[in-house]
Amino acid sequence: MHRIRVVRHASERGGWEMALATPPPALAPLIRDYCGFREAMPQPMRRQELPGVQVVLILEFGPLLKHLDDAGRVTRHRSGFVAGLDERWSTTEHNGESHGLQVNLTPLGARRLFGLPMHELAHRVTGLEDLWGGEARRLVESLAEARDWAARFALADAFLIQRAERGPAVDAGVKWAVERIQRTGGQVDIATLASELGHSHKHLIHQFHEQVGLPPRRLARLLRFDRAVERIKSGGPVRWAELALELGYFDQAHLNRDFRQFTGGPPSALLRRALPDAGGFESGA
Image 1 (cartoon, helix red, strand yellow):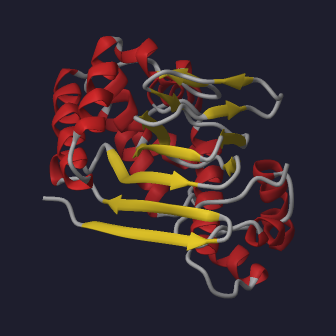
Image 2: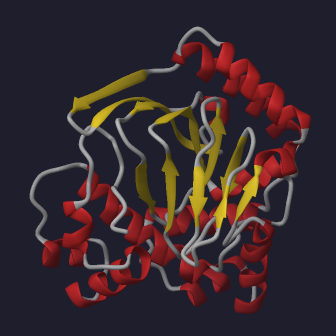
């Protein structure tokens, strides 16, 4: 049984409903959280999609989202898409109406659910039907017909549990290393990590390439950035210098460097573009 929190927004810019939920215990190692969404806007809406430590699965049962990468390439994918781990931001756009379900997967969860070397999904957006074929289409049709968010989450749970049962096992050493990076907030020496596992640095990087999609040092960097973004989303004033030290940055300049790489501007600019009521970040373009 999901604990669902529904957040609604209505203003001159339009309205949206976000249904936020955590996964059941059987999926907790694979899924960070769910977000069901429904939007009705008076004009097209663009959002900046930031890099993070989750692989994003979008199931669409409304008009298809446009996805624009940082080179300006535009794609649409019937049924939805998967955005692998990346170190670049992208943009999504809809023409005023959007309806679907976002599933934020852990990298190792994505490995179980898609059964691919994760470097094949990293740094790109892949159509869901290219990965799951007709299963993706049938799942989306069922979600569209479901009576409410609780029913949709239950359908998604059942489908994903079945997929996970058919998926490849995750290497225990890689799982331990990922959990160690998460527990330390990315503040762990990668050479020490490899040594504790009894691996060479090169072998650990190869294992992460296959099962996570990014090498451990870059995953740790994304984790620090992701936690900074979560602090912005939580609302309230942010003291950037204090936040930088809390998250393990050497100083605020290093925090600013990551924000410029991952968002295109300083942290204060992202804060100004934060939408209320779990609405994400408006695109600066």
